Image (tube, rainbow, N blue to C red; front, side, top):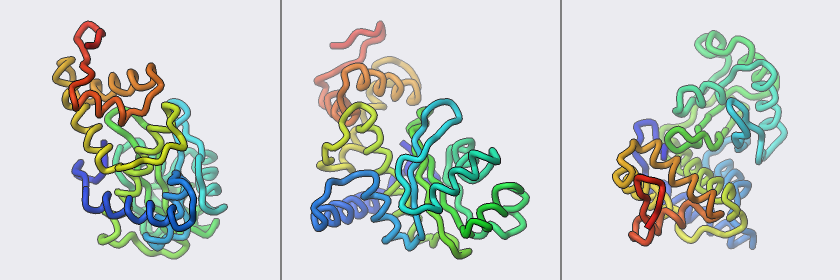
Length: 245
């Protein structure tokens, strides 16, 4: 599960973000959802808006949550011109952080998208791919109206929000939407550990191991994190010939 630019997870930032979101949800008497995560991220990261796009097919994503109209406008611009930070982040499988779309480097990189983003009123955009191995789940997008880069001190927090969004989306995809996570940092660790165990059990790489883990969760209509917990506790084992014990 990608949670930082060098592949390492920041458990401190993750735990801090989760506690913050949980406390905010309790205060507002609402469930923890992707929308709630976006609202919390906007306030904490000092950005003007946020959105989460989910993958609906090869090379295709749609807006699941947007905190403001600009977030939706940016997604539409990318869809129209066929270029932009979201597409680049998905292709590179790594965060794309743009501090000023007026900069020559950015106008050369996205000659169609950059000026349209500025025209729409957005000068900075920070994009995090939400994926595990080869599985493209979606994208988290934050934007600012002013040309202000994302402060290094806030990058770990942004990545933590992205990981929380990823975990909620994974559970939603297997029919667990609405179930409030008890400990998302534990879930992330269990998915990591379970993927490694499945790789050893099936003698495959981590990407194929995660694909097998996710496919089994879909087949049984249960949260990925729940199946991962069973694998880690050795209540469930994957076998080479496709059977389980």
